Amino acid sequence: MVLIEGGVPQRPVVFVSRTVLINKVRQKLYKLKDNPGWVTVFGMAGSGKSVLAAEAVRDEALIKECFPGGVHWLSVGQVDMPGLLGKMQSLCFRLEQKNNSSARRPRSIEEAKEQLRFLMLNKYPRTLLILDDIWDGAMLKMFDVQCRVLLTTRNRSLVDSVSGHREEVEVESSLDQNKALEVLSLYVNKTVRELPEQAGSIVKECKCSPLVVSLIGALLRDFPDRWDYYLRQLRQKQFRRIRKSTSYDYDALDEAMDASITVLQNDSQTLYKDLTVLKKDVKVPPKVLSILWDLEPEEVEDMLQEFVNKSLLFRDCSQKPYLYYLHDLQLDFLVEQNRDRFRELHSKVVRQYNQFYKMGPPLSGNEESLYWFRYLTYHMAQAELSKELCELMFSLNWVSTKAQIMGPAPLINDYLEYSAILDKENSTVREQFQEFLSVNGYHLEQKPFPDVVQLGLAQPNSSEVYRQAHLRAQERASGG
Ligand code: ADP
Image 1 (cartoon, rainbow, N blue to C red):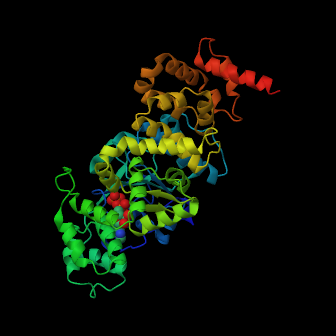
Image 2: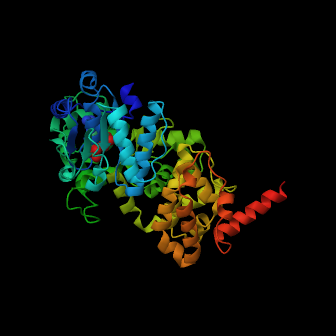
Image 3: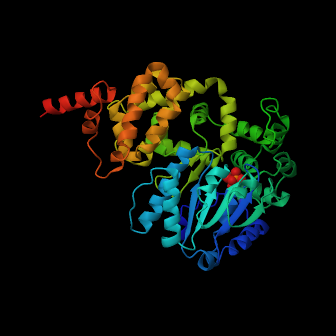
């Protein structure tokens, strides 16, 4: 219960225990028993850090002795500061709710840090915070509030920027050979001894990367006679010339991804390619995909199940609705593959959204609406749909609904982020909306939510915000 409540992900369907590593992490966590501090789990992308961190806390004795206040998981990923604020807001909200208290939603990252400090110190002493996949020292600093933290990262030196006791564990990029074979054997439902001779070469070609072995394992489960074929495919290295990374050998992953996508039916391939538009580390509710793909929820469920079975997609079951996401190496692959169709794919998202929400933006604060409020502008910008972006962001209706659901901070950030595009259309109107938000930031935080039309009417007569508010006031009046 503690782990579920804290949002700790479940084990992957096929899982092998890396006992030595797990014990190492647990030993380090025991050192946080009496004092705050940091345990860093570092290693390359796809090496299994997140799985390891989740597994390390799946230990009743450890939780009881060291973290009786519970464990809270936060997937950070490659967010920018406003994105991090959103994540910290939901963490604080989760902690407040569990504690049956309610504080004002933090408006800035500094406020969020202070709220977290207060919660950790007074309400959740001896709680473990797990920060998964954190990239940036400046972001880590926002959690430097004298609490107990386990973090996973690709960058070992990240903790240099924070204070307090530090421990670290290195995760090798590969499983040891026997464990990699065990992953394959679990997929194909055989013992390691029963595996054909090609198995050894396959795991070698996969460089024993847990992510890559999982992709090939899922393929072999569906096509048990293709050991030779997939071995050849892995050796082919057709993607070698497409891209080079200085820090990681992606070849095997690319071959495995290509092989997994190739066996999908044509329709499913198209749907999978649509996922190219997702932002890194963003988890999507099925309803969003149902709109994107224009499919019934049941058809979406079947499709997602197929992708998950093939390890092409991962499922976060720690909340309902379940959320779906790609590993960022998989997303890199998709982006690389579909580079020339990038605009078109983003346009499709916008088109589908417009078709579904003809009558106006969604009004509830559920996961699906949140997705649109967070990322619709991003899709429009990527699709280079400047007119649509301006229409949306110069609409009082959108501004008031988004502010009601998310507060004014993310909106202000949108105007900053897309100012170059908006200014090409009309820089005066962009400034007027921005001005409206900065002047009314405080009011737009309040509950009950204020009447935005009234706030708009207080703007100068020349402002577009005033014009739209006036129009709405007239409509109200004529509607009685
Ligand atoms: P990282 O956090 O280092 O990027 P993850 O922990 O997300 O890597 O692991 C990537 C994928 O590798 C997982 O989704 C899973 O398919 C596979 N994997 C990782 N660790 C294991 C394990 N111990 N047993 C089986 N599969 C694993």
